[in-house]
Amino acid sequence: PEERSSGGLLSVLGVAFGLAGSVGGTIGAGILRTPGLVAAQLATAPLVLAAWLIGGLYALLGAICIAELAASLPRAGGWYVYAEQAFGRRAGWLVGWTDWLAHCIGLAWVATTVGELLVEWIPAQAAAPWEGQVIALAVLILFSAIQWLGVRAGGASQELLSLVKAVAFLGLAAASFLLPSSAPQAAASEPTVVIPQGSALWLGAVLALKSVITTFDGWASPVYFAEEFSEPARDLPRSLIGGVLAVLALYLLINGALLHVLPMQTLSQATLPAADAARRLMGGYGAQLIAAVALVSLLGLINTVVMAAPRILFGLSRDRLMPAVLSQVNQGGTPVAALLLTSGSAAVLVLVGSFDHLLGMGAFLYVGLPLSG
Image (cartoon, rainbow, N blue to C red; front, top):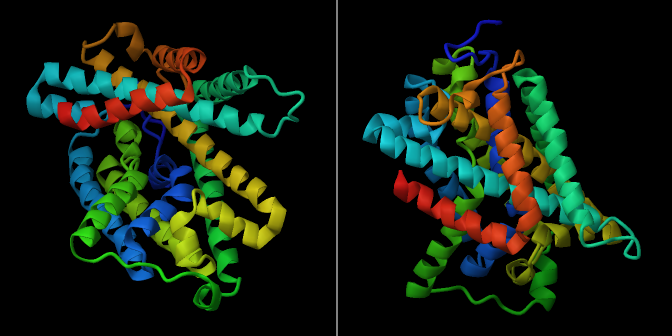
């Protein structure tokens, strides 16, 4: 369909994009690291898998609630739309502004991570400290250019990156199941794992669930494009609920594969358990494999944020809570001024903030955003 929404955005997105946005906005490099943190707290395979299942069900309850809101209020702006309806314009502006700023910091953080990851592939004698920043800026420019072409180009890139990401993780998990089980090796050579009991078990469960729920964060990405779905009442619930279910299935499969190939003691002590599994699969090439998977995951996140954050400014601007120029949309359906402001702000943060500083700022805002909402 070629129809435009009332705000000038193109209403051309469907369930395929919604699922790609939910999966792409959720699955990042965290799943490569978090299984080790969860195993360290719970120490047994049934409890580890139960934690991931509970975290997925928690996200699913949120998706059901938000699906109803998004379907009844299909407007661009993300969480701002619901806060403004519930608490008024001032609260809506605060939530929208904070949400956009958090997106910019997160975008700069992920772009910096991509730069640091890619600079590792440059020979040591040729690498310079500033090269990571140059790569991060180049990545921001690339994805901003894709979004400038319009919502169709942005949606297609999101679907492609999410598909490649899902296939990469599925391939890693499936290949891991082809290896012999770690159980006999663990029984012969690994020390006995101490299973937590009583209060230690409850504390471990809380810490494990915190890590799991954080790894599920991002499933609500489709709500930022609610106005651009051709049939939002049908497509948004399917996108949100289907996206959470797809991520849950993939996370359970990945954790099952890690538990299959790594003894519990090894898994619980691993900083990057997926890399340990990859080394069992490919030997010395395992590290490069995980780096490639992490890169694809991070690029998918960058595309999601570069596409979503301008919609927050667009919604605020259209409701006269931000300058009117930020609601201007080009022929492709992209809020161009909002895109430039978002990418420009992220670029400045890349240049002036280190990885640790960006992580600290992002953590503060991501904790404060739910409190302000």
